[in-house]
Amino acid sequence: MLNRFNFERSIGAVVLGMVLLVAGCDTGGSGSSSMQGRAEADSVAATAAQQAEQATAVSDAAQIALQQAVISERLPYGEVDDQLVYGHFVFPADMVEPLPAVIVIHDWWGLNDSVRTRADRLAAEGFIVLAVDLFAGETATSVGAANQHMLRVVENPEIAQENISKAYDFLNGVAGAPRIASLGWGFGGSWALNTALLFVDDLDAAVLYYAPISIDEEELRTINVPILGHFGSSDKGISVATVRNFEDALERLRKNYDIRIYPGAGQGFADPGGDSYNAKAEEQAWQATLEFFSRNLSTAAADVE
Image (cartoon, rainbow, N blue to C red):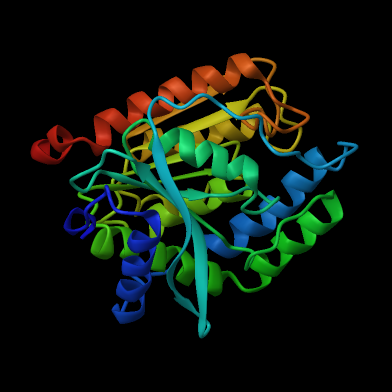
């Protein structure tokens, strides 16, 4: 576990220890879901329809002041298809005991600086964060390239499923996180929901930002985790009617959910480096996310269960 390390030592020593632990772990998936195929196919269409109008791809996010210092590193968290998979691993610099963890899943641009910046910001709030990479180290700087990366995942969803399973196993077993959540934007938001289906009895919360969503109640029925969904009223790919239908399905199934629609916000409103960034909506969603994690990832939440 992470608390076995002396965090005053260099980050290089920490990384070496993590690599050795990953190499020795026999991690395995915890389930599967048919939602992946449909959700990702929908993601291609919905995201492309909205983002194709942008003249350029997202740029690196502006630096955001952190609540406290963090330690971050590119780190292998498992092996998929006989290849090590690397993510952005970050935690508070003063951490001495394992903290609750969040699996962060990138949008269709890939694991870029924008995602890493937001992962750092989340870790500075008191979480272990692992931002996974579903694109094998590639990022996109154009709509066409982003669409191709996303299509490869659509055609081989099992690889992404295994990737996220390895991330969960890493945080649970190696990092020793007492509670684990998923969070993603757009393409990654649909996979944050899929993570709740992969780990129906183990995940503790899921946050979806403007995610293409499934209304299949048979699949949604299996979800046992609290869900927080952030959507924009001006999102051309995911209509308000679709979001309301999703909310109605969760209500009929008596799920624990909080669905929020932000006036005037569109797809990508939470990315400070994107053309559709909406500072007011992003800040409101950020505060709601922190409150949601505080309720569902704390030790007190575990005691209630």
